[in-house]
Length: 138
Image 1 (cartoon, one colour):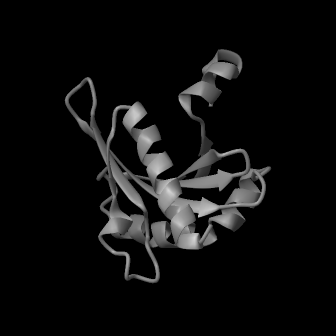
Image 2 (cartoon, rainbow, N blue to C red):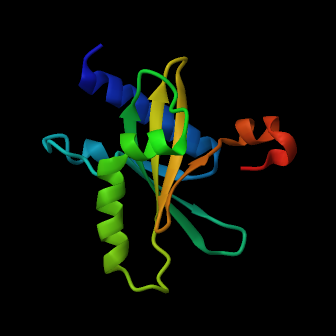
C-alpha cells in the first residue's frame, strides 16, 4: 500500500469514528493534496447539548508500535507541539480555541489519541476504552 493510499484509508477510518461520536467531519487534505505538509487531516464540529459548538482538528500519524509514555508521545509529536505552542501564544488568553488532536495509527488497526493543549500533551481515550477502565477515568 502506498503512503498516500494508507493516509487516505486512515482519513476515512478517522472520519467514521468522528461520525460515530456525533461530529460532522471534513477531510481537509482532499482540499490540499498538492501540499507537502498538511497541518491537520480532518476537522470536525459538533453541537453540544448547551448549544455551543465543539470543534476539533485531527492530525494523523503512523507508528510501528503503541507509544508507551507521554514522554514518547511528546517526542513523536514534537513538530505538532511546536506549531501549536506558537498558535496558542498568538491567541488571547480568554479565547477558547478548537481542540487539536493527534491520532496515531498503531498496529491492529487502532488509533492512539492525544490532545495538544496550552499545557502540553495528554492521552485521550475512545468511549470504548474509557468503559474498560475503572470508573471510565482518563
